[in-house]
Length: 329
Image (cartoon, rainbow, N blue to C red; front, top):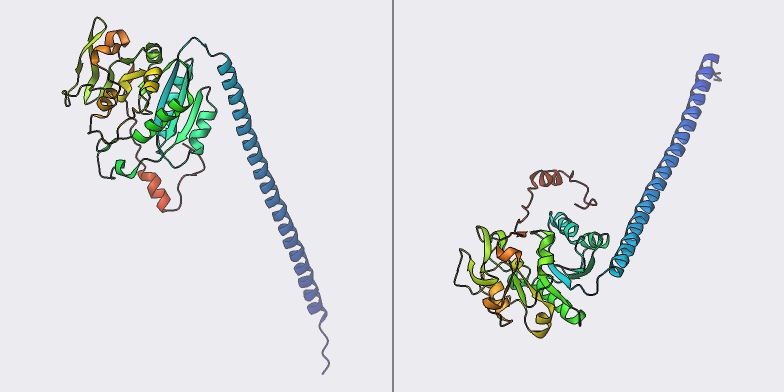
């Protein structure tokens, strides 16, 4: 039987078809708009990345110009201070090195030897050094296994920074020839007065001074009278010949070159690292040169930056909501 559609049904069908076509066109336009929007976002991301890279290259170029300018302004008759700084990866590393760099950048004829405890140098340290107006050498060496402390061990259980300081010494011996200067171990968890470096600059053999906030004391170091070291103020194992902190002395570079086999001994007993090292130069306390107002002025503090607590960061990381790791701190 031939049945024809009612006009009302035809109209409904036509309206439905028209609506369907309109919907499809709308979806198509939305899809096109979405693609355009996505492409725009990608283009913007690429543009911002290019701008960031350009900015970094510009900063590096400016820093290089500053270093060249600084080198041209070096005073040839002024001894150079070679500061060896061992450092390792941690939350406060960049903050500590930034604090040091903003002191060191004001010291003329200064060369910073930064040695990382790592297989290779890191970008975060390289970037920091590159933008500072400081002559620097950037090295890396991994601490030998026998010197690594267990996670549960106190910080004093093993010698720290030995391999890094020794690599710095080796670099100086191999690369610095026929130049006047002094070598100083500038740990990155200390705070330094700029005057300290002018005090040590003209050291003839080994110069000494007190260090604050070390050895469980307000200060520790030489006791001097009329420009001579008579004894040392210390509380722990006072029988040591040189109960000094590593930040308490500087050595003339000629002495470093003369005793080419003298390195910091990783086998030294705890607390004897500095004593054994200084003894290797055949130095006596009577030969030492008191600085810092006859060793009565504090110009360096063993401040030791406190490791920050990351309880909330760990909690958010477990939830997949940790802070953006691409932002260096």
